[in-house]
Length: 460
Image (cartoon, rainbow, N blue to C red):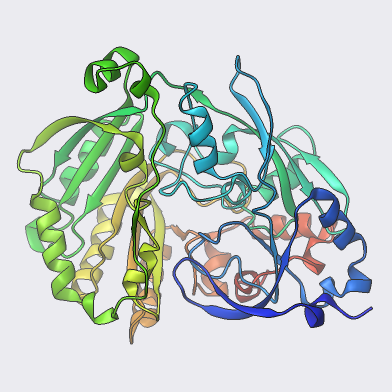
């Protein structure tokens, strides 16, 4: 039998950062049965010769969903069961977070953990073990997943949970699709009385004040800070810290004037970036001007407002294809975490390196993390995480290598879902359970079939 790689057309594919790009065979599946058939005949169809990785909506930034062969699962997008008493939802892995919000917010339910975009699949959220603005209290996405079903390399469907096939569960959550194909999951939604968030925002003078406020408000359900990463001197790390709580129905009705609108789901944004913009538009001066204007948009030290969940959690989702703003060469999102003990000193060192480099970032988002979980490659450890966007330009990777050294020196690590260029040595030093992860992969034959450009770069 001729390998699938030689039968199907190739297509140029990239992650959300549009870097790197590679030619890849695209394999679409519409059922769990089709995946099982493909895997049970890998020797005949040649899947194992080139390896493959699963891809949902392609919102991981770098090369974690790039491979010689890509298995698309967005068509596995049906709901299976919902328990209105407990909030337990069982769905196929291709269901998106936007799908869940569309259907369940009007019924009074919300995601227990959500990243900064709703345009990711449930399978992708598990594979990346995504976190949100409430990690310090409620952990990662996987900690609200009671079970999942995984098609392993042999074609067998494995049921996994913290109690059943636990090592495979902990390798799959945060495992970047390298253990098998997630086809189904059960997660627990949380009850809400309204779609509105009571936001309380603080304008800080510097990084020390920002971190102090994070500590003082560690009981807030949601917290996130935007940092002016080009501010220097005594203004280093000046920020807008935004706290949030779900509003009560009474508060929402008072704001919206009706019971119906109190639980209104999001509306898809109509703005779109139709083409890749000239990269020269993003430069030190335009970014500095934006940062200054954004910081001063809040005139008071502290203010409150009521805001719909959509702009609070997903401010960039209203602008479709916003990644094109960085031009055809793309960009790298650099997200790291450092332990709380290194917080102020370590974060100051990194911000000072950024200001010296004059490589600003429109997006500079700071969050507090709670304790790490049991998953072998999950990103968060207790401390602080900062996410930054840098357009691809000469000298960028050498600069990021410099930041890597500071992060490692502080005992931190980089986020695999955002990574596009981390070295194998940096990865293996900062993810000490990578060998346990590899042992689980080997046990189920995953290392012979599932591989991505990222996994090969990192020595997995």
